[in-house]
Amino acid sequence: MKEILIVVGAVFLAGCGDSGRPAVGEPEFGDPSGSSGMSRYSTSQPLTDNSGASAYKILLMGNSHAAGLHPVLEQLLALGLPDKSIDVRSSVSFGFLSDMVDDGRAEQTLESEAWTHVILQGQKYSTTGTMTYPTAAAEYWIRGSKEQGATPILFPEHPRRNNSWEGRTLWDLHSGIASRENSCVAPVGLVWDEVIFQDPSLILHMPDGNHASSTGLLLTALVFYQIITGRPVESLPDLSVFGVDAATEAIMKQSVSALLFTYPPCAFEA
Image (cartoon, rainbow, N blue to C red; front, side, top):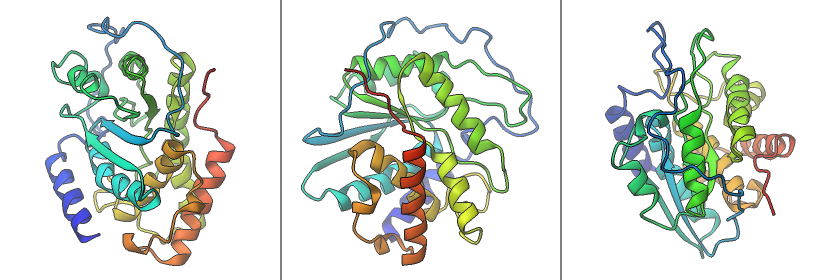
């Protein structure tokens, strides 16, 4: 666990200029069309279920929130599936999904491996609720992921500390994207809201109130574990290696299970 914390801390220091959200108090502008340079992936394919793959190859695309999740998700998958080959990588491109379009690297990375799952984080949204950003880039990367045979999973960020509306708002935003271009949607913010309700004393954020602490990263990773594997989080062995006690583990697992039951993340097509 010490090694994971060192890696995560380095990621956050490297990514502190890109928090995953437009900066509070700064002007918020959106490309009114959001469609320039998005002709490469133009065909919509069915959403396929790769949970039963013999090996997992998972690509994370986004900014510091996605990069921070990488080592924790990799360890959690290895813990729960010790006999399965696990390969989790972060895209060489870094930033909002709209910034990666035609940057010369993101498409190349997406097409470089037979990914089973692609986690997409970094859809811009208004931190003040006064601006609407285009979602064309997110839909573009969903199409591209499905063209490569991968299962795309949208990653709405967790809410900022003491924020009561972001979890639901980001779930609604990403569910809207999935209604236009079918994708799985991880109810990360909704799970965080439930866990915070169950135990407000848990420290899920880093001191900046934005990025996830080690406990917050584990909670987010649990959501993705069940979506990727199709296995209930209750089937995981104890999580003491991640530095959480039995009571916290129980709250986290129960919340993930309940919210994924209430908000099914994927609508797979035949």
